[in-house]
Image 1 (cartoon, rainbow, N blue to C red):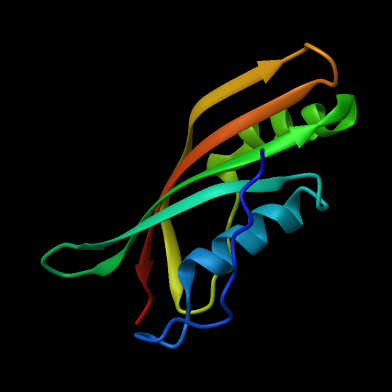
Image 2: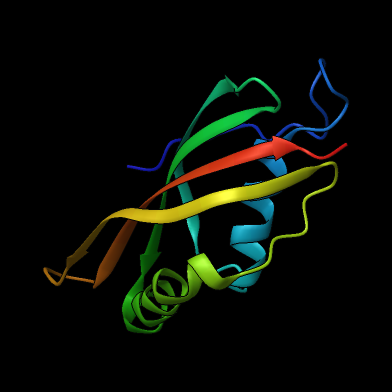
Length: 118
């Protein structure tokens, strides 16, 4: 069952929400084949940077959707993201689960780190 997640246009703290921007770009680069299952974001900071750690899951349904999901997973680390006021420092697929019972589905659990840019 998919969870409905409200995607905000802006964060109240910085004026720009990296979670929403990251989710929107991931869905856009799959031409809408991805469905957001969940997103968890936690503030992150080092001595010189502030940002957010993300953990999210995307699902892909049907044979064509599963193919799109595999292509995303294989190319994710090479993609240059365009997030306003944030940079994707690290992103990778932490788990990939494919099911073939009934309609084929693929679940990608993605972990990412975004930091504020300037």
